[in-house]
Amino acid sequence: MDFDEFKRKMTQIKQRGYVDSHRSGPTGIGKTLEDLLGIKENNIAGPNFSNYELKSGRKNATSMLTLFTKSPEPKGVNSVLLEMYGYESRKKGISGKELHVTVDSIKPNSVGLQLTIEGNRLYIANNPRVKAYYEENTLKKVFEAKYHKLIYVLADNQWKGRIEQFWFNEAYLLDGFSFERFSELVNEGLLKVDIRMGHYPNGRIHDHGTGFRILPKYLPRCFETIQRVL
Image 1: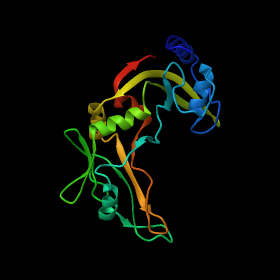
Image 2: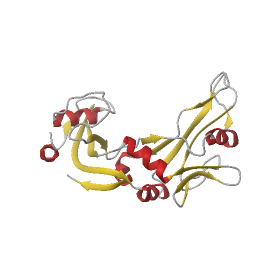
Image 3: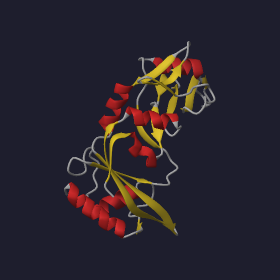
Image 4: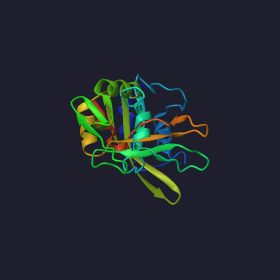
């Protein structure tokens, strides 16, 4: 399937209105869209067709999408954050500190961390005690490694009894990382960072990954090239 055929099929799918989900649960939207487009399901990472990767999302989703996970710079600063901002572990049988918090730009969180942007850096912490940050080029590299030539289809959803239904009525061709748009999402409080660290029972630090999260409907705003195709 080439891109022109994809657009033709998507127009036909949009005209159908709401269709029953082909699978229950969160993955139903992707499975339904692939079936309607005639794309065979596989577990192999990479483009779905014509060098484009296909993703889909519910417009009214309240669960945030993890864009990617990446530890801040400089190397090892996560351990410093854990020591300075962590609190005693709440897990039975585990001693030491843990730090499971969400950080945004709107206001300092419960432990005092807040996202700020200065120049080409995004800071998780920027004070005399510790500086933890991401360079623009680092964010670009990590983002584009996961999102390259993406076709993103959005759907309204509703329920008919216990059956979820989708109306696929919006689609974008997305490519390239925009630090400017990324920064706007941060400053509006729409893009958040989750820090998830703790200790194993033997005392070693356990880092679950520092995740950048956003509602699915805002994903297109992260890209340099945004072309609406439906």
